[in-house]
Length: 381
Image 1 (spheres, helix red, strand yellow):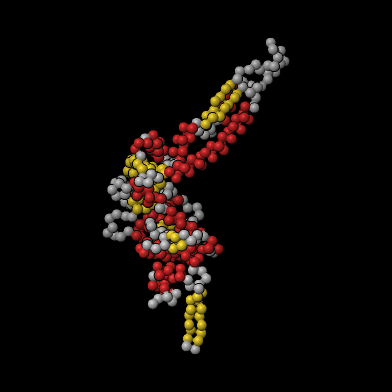
Image 2: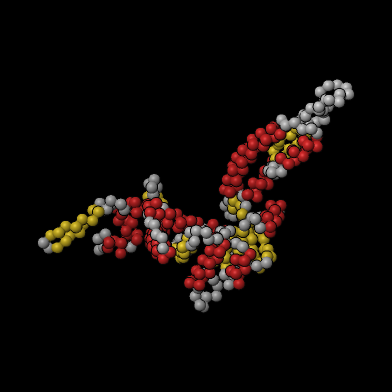
């Protein structure tokens, strides 16, 4: 495994460390944050950078260490926490206290909690996109589970029991794992255990019949509550003052950790060929990791430079479907640069170098990147 940290906005890699395959996220992420802080923090710096991580970092022990080191952090709070479940339930009951973004696509609920590691500001977040996604997923899950439970109850009703108590106990045992959005109406039927009328003979054996009927129904209110709960997630931080980091900035900072995923996507890409290199010694693994992050650094820096120049000059480039874009990927640019050849001709006067198949699009890209790139392609004045 690898621990990777990137910068905000530019996606430049700042830290990479190869890890043992059995490493724990809570241990390795904390060690990465502490190592990065030690390398980047200036001696006279009063405030540290803000470290953004997913819920793998969040634990009482880790937050206590980060707070003791006066590190500012933003992390998702795991929903397995008792406090998180309580605050989420409280937020869903008080819909009037929620705030909404200007475009109406995002809403959040802010609260301040007192925990063993100190005070934290929690922001419970929900969006239109997540609500729609959860709605579709949950309906599909409910439909699938409804078919399974109806089949299970049908088999249960086909069973024969000696008495109502046995039927009641079996049904209650079967419904232990019933989802909260289902309701079951139970009916226990009284019956004569003997087939013949009148007083049964001594040798008569009572018949076993199914005195249990169960009907499954949906509780729409519970489904709506579950949709609202699943559409929410909690982002926590030790930056208590909204003047230093507003709620909306806090949410956006957390969502921008996708830059790390893009870095991993680059490193795992088959075109990168890293998966075809096998090394066994730990020092060679470290060396390979260094080469990989160095390649990522060059790739991201070139991409950041090109996008910055496009923004400064208010220009665009055509993307893969020939539509204008101001945020092209370097992978696409590299594909566009394929087919350019360098021809060297030996003459009595020396060697003449010619760049072939250079198109106007290529020249635009090179001009945006700057004079050194123009010089490489013999286009400098």
